[in-house]
Image (cartoon, rainbow, N blue to C red; front, side):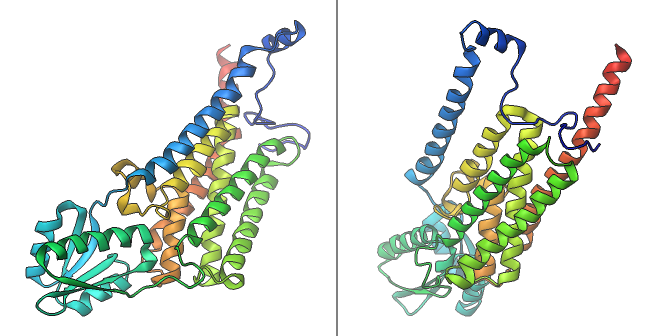
Length: 351
């Protein structure tokens, strides 16, 4: 249902600020602000800061490897590694060292281990998989080698670009695009009495494309920190911005004043903290690992990494995840006026 500018459609708030109720007005008239006016913003701020600090500090406090994918050449060595390292690694037995190296370069595993003489081991890592993950693998293999009296030689077969030595460019780019999409969606909430619904959709879609393009150009060709092909990278970041924008607008529309803080927790706090960049996904606790790839920031970081260093070998699933977030949120927003109209008609019929 479309409305003329100046009037908000049924079921859609003109602002994400709480509406002023008659009770609130009476309190103000008596010179006494309502208790909710004091408590709600303070409690929301406390929840946000507690969640942010808990996620970012807590996840980095004591990361532990769990089933980190490791290719191991040779049945004998595979059995020894499985026995020695247990559930900390997920051993992928390979016929020989070249096959194990290929698995690393396809991003099927994060490292490959093979015998390199009677008392030497060769560990081939993908530095692009993240410094926290590769450091954990080197530590685990080093402990095994020390106990077995063997020496380890390490090679980085998929190194990070020179302008992204710490491997965090993809994370910061995804964080910035998510933040921009969140701000876009938040501002769109106050435009219900200014723009038609379809115009707000055009605004969200067009601005998401602009956000994705600007971020991709700056991080890619301009700074050289993200070596992904420009067009696929732009498409990925556009989907991320759209997912954040439409989801923020959806939550604000359906949940009212609490919607924007919920979006803050979901996208900017939990989503970015569990994205697998600052702390590798294989080092996250089970619950964080489970949601990591399902939230837009985690899906975007995985796609950026695959496009940049692994020829997009595993990019399809996270791209679909981003598209689903944006598409489902847009559909639910489009259905909101119709659902509200039906509810209003049903109420009028029964009264």
